[in-house]
Amino acid sequence: MTEAAARIRALIARQGPVPWSVVLESALYGPAGFYTTGGGAGRRRDFLTSPEVGPLFGAVVANAVDDAWNRWGRPDPWVVLEVGAGAGSLAASVLAARPACSPALRYIAVERSPALRAAAATALPVEDPAQILGPQLGSTRDPDDDMADGPVGAAGIGPLVTVLADLPAVAVDGLVVANELLDNLAFDLYRHRRATWHEGRVGLAGAELAEVDLPAAADIQVRLRSLVPDPPEGCLVPWEAGAAGWLRRALAALSRGRLVVFDYARPTAELARLPVEEWLRTYRAGGRGADRLEDLGAQDITVDVALDQLGLVRAPTRVEDQAAWLDRHGMAALEAAAVRGWQAGAARGDLRALADRSRAGEATILRDPAGLGGFTVCEWDVGPDRSGGAGPAHPEPARSGGPPQQREPYGN
Ligand SMILES: C[S@@+](CC[C@H](N)C(=O)[O-])C[C@H]1O[C@@H](n2cnc3c(N)ncnc32)[C@H](O)[C@@H]1O
Image 1 (cartoon, protein in one colour):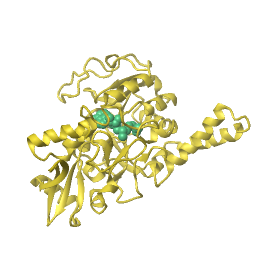
Image 2 (spheres, helix red, strand yellow):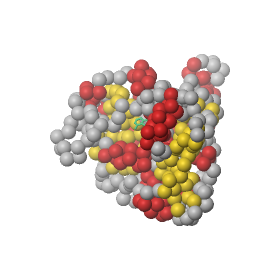
Image 3 (cartoon, helix red, strand yellow):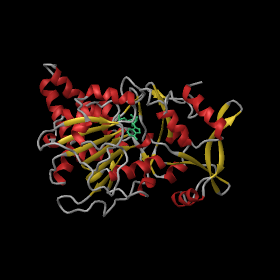
């Protein structure tokens, strides 16, 4: 039995069946949790994500950082808060792309896992956070405190880079970016049986962990009835309170700018019609893992993000497929330049030509509609931009369907 499973059993023995969100917190982020002990994204870790395909994704994100910087009037400092930064691959690629905003840039890689924070700190040219954000770095921000410090420093001294364990206490001008973060935040499970919703908790059946259904709280019944008006008998859905809570905090971390979230996503009613294994998946060591109640702490547990539940917090300003978002931010141009570079340098076969060839291959992977290209990008604009636009006044509807969107097992 894993240490994380033993901890959950001890908790159940004391408290009775526990919510899935408690199991997930412990299995992913507890003392023996999957991320705590250094599991995660990367060719040498457990699964591939867009930044781990190669540097192209970061080069496109760098264009998006510049796009928002221009739109909000080129503030200095301009802060990128990358949340769920893992071992720092996306940060390294964005910085290597040298966006035009670099002299104004403060890049803050926010990562909950101490092991991954340490890895990011070796991959990035990090500085003391207080040098970048001032002394007020706690994770709870008092919204009435007008005196809270903002980013510090003279103009034109960027890029400055640091790593934090949580969102900073101060609100900033800039961009919050999160790639495949929300699918890893704690959620609960609800099952519809005999005309009512039940909470699927984790208890013990003899010596084994097993799901047990308890009556759902009245407020969740109301929410789920409106999100899933016609639930199939026996269907299961996630209630993603962790993602919703994070969205609230991330929006509060911006005084003006943009929040950009990349993930696999579907509406709750669509999840209700699918087998649970299609939207609640496990990964380890480059492939799919075991059943969700097995090997707790030794495998990742991830869920499709329920976009309509996020919309209850605030309707996004924009929702689009990742392939479309990448092309809107210049991936096609970067790809065309790489193809030209490879064609011109193929005979030489030098490192530059090989890098161009690899970049063209990355574009194909990132654009694949059955893979990473089919992911969803959700954006929330905060505060008036240079054109006077006041944020999410005209939200676009979330997509209702789409291709299968799943984390790429390692090597795919
Ligand atoms: C699926 S990984 C994605 C890593 C990286 N963004 C990538 O795309 O390769 C999710 C990461 O989010 C981190 N994480 C989870 N909750 C977090 C939180 N509240 N704040 C910061 N990081 C968090 C996890 O430790 C993990 O490294």
